[in-house]
Length: 136
Image 1 (cartoon, rainbow, N blue to C red):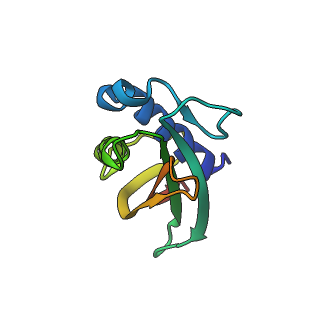
Image 2: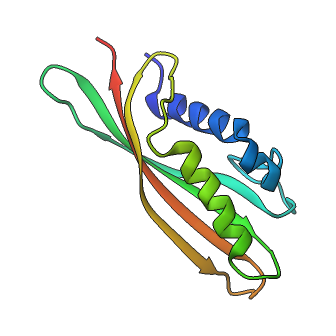
């Protein structure tokens, strides 16, 4: 059986890369692991956590996903917040299709904005939770 976490990651990255408003801000700079010296701004698929959450006779998982957004816009948080808005619009309650599992739901849980210690970089963290069903 395929890994539901990997299937969800693939669907999320594809959805983000297909969103015109996000592409206008970051082009195709959506990474699992950003390259050294990646140009700003960019989006990073971050950490995930899978929790088994069977209901009745169905196998399912809650998958917590963290998306990071990085910017060095000289005008503060504006660019970062615009990119985060595009990420949330792309993924919150999105009808993602997984190859061998079924997405029940995906919702944004939390958004945070930080100034990094270098006083140049801003960092956004968006957390989503997805419920994914495993077929019988």
